[in-house]
Image 1 (cartoon, rainbow, N blue to C red):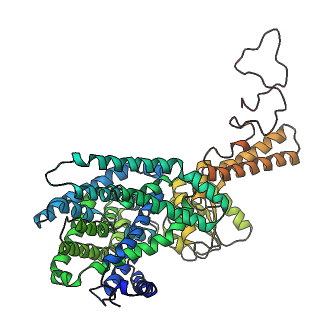
Image 2 (image 1 turned 180 degrees about the vertical axis):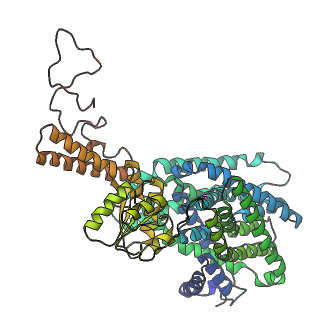
Image 3 (image 1 turned 120 degrees about the horizontal axis):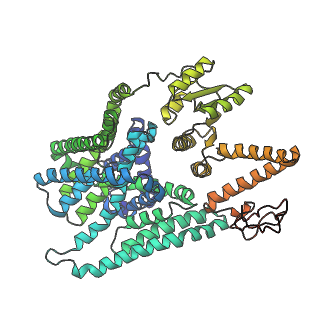
Length: 619
């Protein structure tokens, strides 16, 4: 089979699927990224390998849909609230990393003879890091919630956001004539920005009602079709006005990031995104000319090591300026030293636009691929040394993580005032409980009372596994740190699906956040305590125990219904369930007595009648 056009669609599909199934697991078993497996599969079946396909460009149009969907998913994950909370690291550390690294790499490439738009494109492409590889390593190590994990994530977020406008501007830069100026292109630029503004407005005001309407039809295939329609429609709209198709998908995802349908859309898009993104990387691997690479093997490997060394050194220096510990700075700098997946978008695009020659495009793509091979290997080799260095920098944690004997049917995370009471109930039911906590003083105090509490940070995936989370029937998260509780809950939902989660929520907002992360019934300690308090107050007023309990259960039922509606409709959802709510057209419960104006002075001649109270509206 020499050409995909000469072969049946079924045969071509079988070759692609077979190559992916053979190559990807091999690299994953070796601890490397699936992206490298797709690249390797493309090289093997492409012109430089077995020659099963000789026209990789014929597949590029379809394969680039994977990049479009990848940008859509990135937009879905970049919730505006999340961006605001991380703005200092994203706009500070992320911007500095891209600027400093890009400038230094541009100087190196300038010395090598690269000029003009090609120099700008290659410096930016090499400054990016491999998001898929970095996040995979962080997730596998349970390090996303650590200090270096958060810093690395912030840099990757800025890079992902910077990719979109850069790719969008590349076609415009290519269209500018050498001596002409920009005046003749102003109408095109105005049209492009007008289309972008229209897309933002449509996403803000039309997409949510559109998906709500489709959700009422209760047809899964229609929702999937609608998700594809939104992604491809937004991409085509931007492409039609001369901007990047990926930009349209990104904006559509960003507009839906706060939507109630975000998780559903991500689940619908994920299979298409994964397969098409794999097809894209395979087409990139097929486009690498093996003869050109072998003829310049020393240059390719030398440049790969030079780029990784420069990026690691510069990122390390920036992290130290941001006062990160030495071990964390080294971890993050090695993790971010690779060249990212989007280099395989920018490099072919730069070649198509005439920024660089085809031979240079092949060499630069090979350099990027080699860094992606070497990066995860260096992270794995450096980890033992970094772990020992991190241990020496811990100020007071002289207790080792020893989980010998752990592995009960219940894993309790946190042994503070809340966790101690919960643990008492579990022990009273004669359940086998494993408790972990990271407060050394608390662990020692528990030991004096005869309790066995293991030292460990529940935010780390490896710690949870060592404590028996993979075999636990219930994971109880009892810590009072809302961000850490949310991180652990999200990790447990993904990594330990067999366990039922019982999570302590700090407040209502935290409960809604936990529900968004997959926790079905978060326990709000203040709410439950307030219900008991109100029940006791009613009994003190003379109500019977049964009547007080009936009121408590009714208020609890209303509140849970309101919480579920807030999850689906926003913070004002379910206001009609509140007794005496000011936003409801009429109160659910009629006031038993007339109200009075508390701000008005009572007339001396007419004393206020005994027993008057405030209305539901006043209270």
